[in-house]
Amino acid sequence: MIHVKVQSKIALVYFLLIAILGVLLRFSSVLYVNFNYRHIVHAHSHVALLGWGYTGIMLLVYHLLLKNEVIKKKYQLVFGITQISIIGMLVTFPITGYAPYSILFSTLFIIASYFFSYLVFKYTPIALKKTYYYKCIRIALWYMIISSIGPWALGIIMNTLGATSSWYRNAIYFYLHFQYNGWFILGLFGILFYIFERLNIRISSKVFELFFNLFNLGVLFSFAISILWMKLHIAVNIIGGLGAILQIVAFGFLIKEAKRAIKVKKVSFSNIFYLLLKILIITFVIKLLLQFIGVFPYFSKIISSNIDFVIGYLHWVFLGVVSLALLGFFQFFNMIKLNRFSVLLYLLAFVITEGLIFYKGITVWKNLYLITNFNYYLLIGSSIFLVALAYIFVLQYKKQISSLIGNY
Figure 1 (cartoon, rainbow, N blue to C red):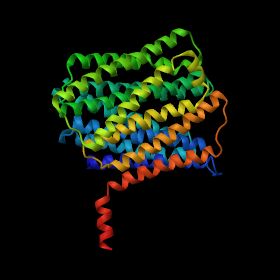
Figure 2: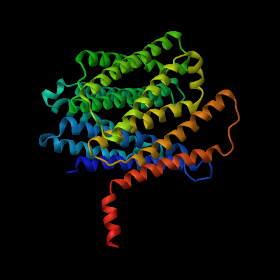
Figure 3: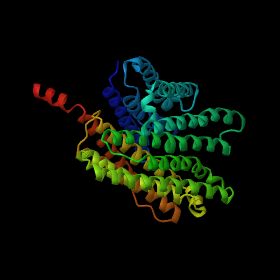
Figure 4: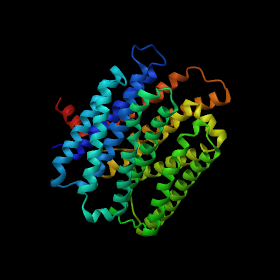
């Protein structure tokens, strides 16, 4: 049986691998490298979302809801199949791109994710199903299931309308929206509510229901933002704007209540977790504001034709919200070790790369001069990410490494 702490290291390896792939992609822009760029992009994105993001939340959900002997064998089987499918994608996408074998492994992953959802729905103890954190995790899993409609639809669309069809692009955006804003965000909120309960930070039922209902309505309505590139009726912008506002309001209620509850209980977090939590709040607020700005016709038109803004936003959410939350939660549950230097090094890489990506987007938007050797600077930023994650990985085996060096 693979222990949950070992599984967290497996997730961390995926994070390290996507950093390596990211550096490889940046390296190709400054020096000729003989590989198919799009194929590496597919491997990079799939391993990021499914290897690091999904695996990280999956094992945390298991740790919170299903950690008992009855379910262990079933979970280990699903976990094993999930890892086979991710490794399969990691190997096949760089070689073949979207082709029969990579599609086979992608399909296997989706089916395994359905089984994991089934395990959570069926085997979570009845007493836990009344908790705030289970309610968030349950709806997060449903968003993940709903998001899979996108990949299933892609095959049909390609065989009928073709890859140039607007439906093809919308199927991808449908998947990404419910992955990012539904599965990842609500799953992470569920884990946060578990931490609140464990630390006896009491969120009133009234505030939770308000947050939960408003935020989920926001998730549904804000999908409209993903299809604004089609330049539809202004009503679509209004629906997307309403969704963005609902999420801002919902988070505002939660933050206000959480600050009150923490002050009442005089909760003391560890220095690292508190640092990550403060940064996480900032990055998430910026995420919500960027989402709201994107509903205005002037900006939605600019964003839809500016790939750097799109990539910058996706990276902001994944690296600045999802990944920071996962690192913080792993650290809270003692699944991985972090220190202040590792966090600051990660943040340095994040600020440099995001700053450069959005800077390039602005130069395209305003038709400004792009600094000389821009791609070299972006490569340096990505390399710092790799160094930060390599350092975090080494931290997990610091004692073993020190012991090994001592023997010599």
